[in-house]
Image (tube, rainbow, N blue to C red):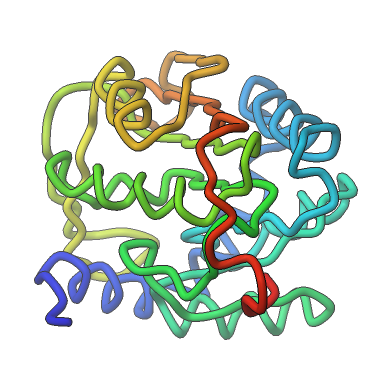
Amino acid sequence: MTETSYLTAVRASYDAVAVDYARLVGRELDHRPLDRAMLAAFAECVRGGEGGGRAVADLGCGPGRLTARLDGMGVRAFGVDLSPAMVAVARRSYPGLRFEVGSMTALDIADGVLGGVLAWHSTIHTPPAGLPPVFAEFARVLAPGAHALVAFEAGDERVRVEQAYGHPVDLPVHRVPPDLVAGLLAGAGLTEVARLVRAPDGDEESPRGFLLARKAPDTATGAGEAGARPA
């Protein structure tokens, strides 16, 4: 399958910044209580929901800090990232956790096996027209009744980042309206449970959105679970 150019650019950019990214953003949640609250709510839904006990995928995990945070909350989490350099940093930082190189556009995960999916600002480089197949992948790998949490930049514009974390990069950033995210998730079979939109904090240039959604208990057919590769 031929990759689109934005994925190639995103991988190269995050490979370049991986070490400095991990150093600079490691404690960003310490002063963002609303972000922590949404992540904690997701973890509680995962632990107590119908997918409880199943693995949770942190998609676009970067250096693994949220994968580790979920693990500390009692969630059996693993990370997937497009950037091999980011995965290498995550493996060095958290040797007890599992991290894999992969793309959320085509996950190497069996149907209906996950207890949750976290996409923490990892869909921001995907054009809005490319979100439906990504959200369809989320729905495909989730167990019936399981939850997804998508964090994103709220707005209605496209910007290009050319310098980040002390390195030249080529990163498209798509700010999208929360209603659009909710509608696209619903189109993939993931129903909104809750949302939060907060004002920009610190050096952020746009509001931040958080949308918690759930796969209906009756949507899965059970296909792919028997004999599937464990998540």
